[in-house]
Every structure is written in structure tokens, then in C-alpha cells.
Amino acid sequence: DMWVSKWFSVTIRTPGDMNSASTGFLKLQSWNSDTGTMQAELFTRSTGAWQSASLDLHVTGTPMRLLLSFDYAAEFQFAASIIARGNAASLQAATLRGVGISLTATSSGSRGSEGTITITGALVPDSAVPSEILH
Image 1 (cartoon, rainbow, N blue to C red):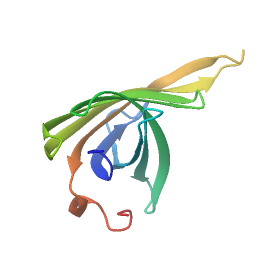
Image 2: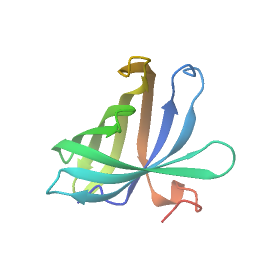
Image 3: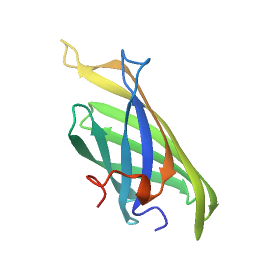
Image 4: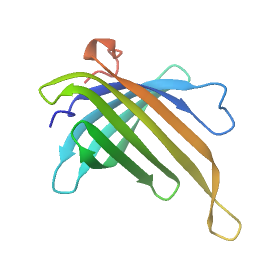
């Protein structure tokens, strides 16, 4: 698959903190055509050390225009798009844009929205990824 082993430099804005942002990297690791899912890893840095989180992204669309969705234990959900320029044999650029919600349990046991999370990014070469997370 043309997206396997691709890296995106990402900016994440979280609830209550829309004036500042954290940066990180998203690596698309493997594709399962039977289930329509892509395994990805999100790397962020808060206090020095890189932290990582595995994501199972549900994928629809065409190779050059993907729609991704993710749901983590009904606590965090997001949808994002990747739009690429070039062709499958020669990707020239790609952008990632997404929005999500963080959910919290309410006193009645139902889920309430804590806020909106946005993620934006661009395809980057391996040389732009810090060596500590490049694998």
C-alpha cells in the first residue's frame, strides 16, 4: 500500500488550550485490506521524552483521498481526511486535517463531550523525523 511507512508532522490542539498546540508525528504502519483498517502510531512529546499511542484507523475513500475514523473505548473519537497530490507511484505532498471529541462519563453514566480536538499535518520525509522515534 502506498501509505505504509509514511510519516506526517502533526499539530494537535486540545480542549481549553486552543491558543497553544502540541506537535508530534504520525506514522502509518500497516494496512489490512480485509478489515479496511490502517495501524498507525502517534508520537507526542510533553516533558522531554516521546510518548506513543497505537491507533487502529478505519479507512474509506480512494488512495489519493482518504477518510479516516478512530474510536477509543468511547472516550475519544475523531475523523480526519488525507488529501494527496501526485499519484500512487510518486506522492508529491499530502495534508491531514481532522477533528475529534473527548468524551467523559457523567454522573448518570452517559457520556458527555469535554471538548473539540483538532489535528492538522503534512507528509514529511523520514529525514524530518527525530531519530529517537524513527523505526
